[in-house]
Image 1: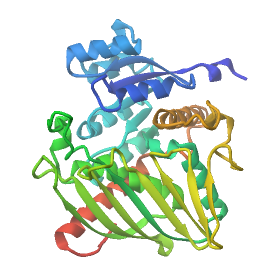
Image 2 (image 1 turned 90 degrees about the vertical axis):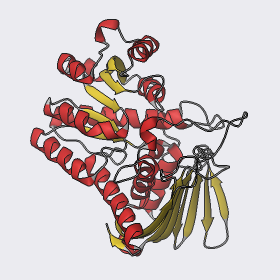
Image 3 (image 1 turned 180 degrees about the vertical axis):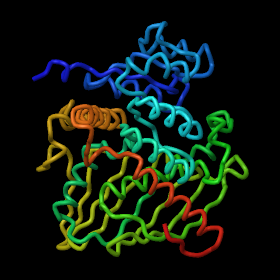
Length: 378
């Protein structure tokens, strides 16, 4: 085997400081399987936060940059990929700049804030024959991947309908002293597509596509603002019609007291149903048409979740959010190596801009349906 294939590839971060919501998670998870090394970054526009983050991440002073444009110019020949971890509204400009310099891109969801901008990104990616992968981390959980394989194998029978929800409480809860939350400023500035869709709705769309393999056809939705921030949408419900006659419901928001992160997926088939709750990430509950119920985990008779790459710890020592991200980073590394060898890549577990485009079109249709109080085609 080529020894270079065993060496970690070189990463740069744009965004992702210690003060960000996901920076440290990306740092730890990307390094977990020794397939990546964080070597450069422009972690924050705040000079102190930028330098402090670099010190914690172990990035040399000479490879820390005050602007992302300067970083791209200086590092474009040195890095194997750049991870974009800035607030979502800044993604478009940075993704475009990286693709135009032929730098492989790994981008946090959402890719952009409108279907028009995602379409422009796809045009540039295709013109430059570039590499672009998105980080949808929840499908990195081993049991979710097990469910993906079970559905493909037909264990649940014909998929009939689904319930997908992601309620959180961050915009309505107070702390022990009665203080209101202080979200990042960009999360409180809704555009044409409110941030809640880009932040949470995109996850539900990706997970349903990942599991059932079908596309949204038409939707009708409602939204509201219930939390501490008037005018900021923080609760969305939606009825969905998917291809192959699948019906679904989605609920996501940040004004649901009692839910730290209540991500739950329920898939109903003609032969069995499956339920997965992110707070119990190692367990999948199956209910069969003959009345049997089964709880599966990595120690059960599974075919995917017991693979060595998903068992850094033995069953009974729960794998969680960081490990799910690490699984995705491992897959992206394999995809990038494939791309560098053949000019193409494919994976059941890694998604590019096409799914991001469908997801934001879904969001736009939901918003239009709410405005017009009628079903809308996606």
